[in-house]
Image 1 (cartoon, rainbow, N blue to C red):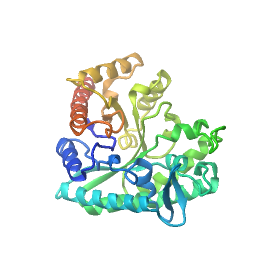
Image 2 (image 1 turned 45 degrees about the vertical axis):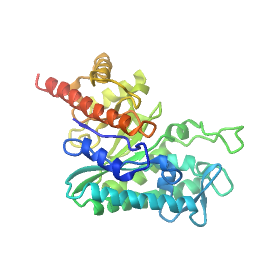
Image 3 (image 1 turned 120 degrees about the horizontal axis):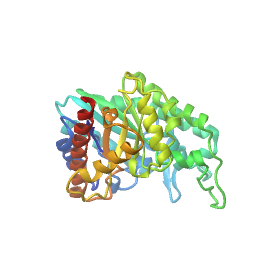
Length: 340
């Protein structure tokens, strides 16, 4: 069983971050391109992707990122940060052959966070949503191709970060005035929009995982998006969601689901645990209560609950190493049951 990280890392040193992640995860696990939001605007989750969007321009206003006619200073800075990060990725993984994860903000989070020129959230305008989704559908495979060129031996995995997905579906986003809520998008609409982004990436042979640290991740909806894996914070899962996971694992297609395993964020980002059993044992106990055998988890990937940018570099290193140990422990438990 493999381990990886969600994406964000503390500090501003891209070279140090890439080398630290590589040293811990390369080999038996899934290393990734670390994101450094501590550098400021353009390195944040939304700005990093918005600055990269094909055919759309953004600038940064006090209310957040906004669609505009020409890229603003912070957007240009964001593209510069990404260029530097890819250069450091190439240096750190020179000669590397194996899986390598990169991340972009997902379409629903972008539509929820980016503002229209008049100030309202883009998700309030169906035309703007379509434009963002179409742009991301072009940007995502291009980004994957750029990363593959930088590390020719890598098999790229794309993660779409969707912390805004549940708010979009629940109609929980405030209007620009703050006195109301924007209308929720229909589940079928969201499924179609996600599929439009995922399909061109999968078509070029790249696995895609959607990650959310939010509660109420819509597992049934996401399972309807072909070839999409799901990553989540297991501490936020309710009984009904665990039952959905068990049902999906029990009815898994042996071929399809091998390529879209669950990504379980079972290690808290603030963990100071000395041994992975502090997190693996409660996870297995929940599985036991709902009738989920450890052997059903064999394709799973273990992650921290969310990004690590709020930690110190040493703290982030500790959580990452703990995640590796948790993956090994969980894999041993699952493999042991599979031989009974």
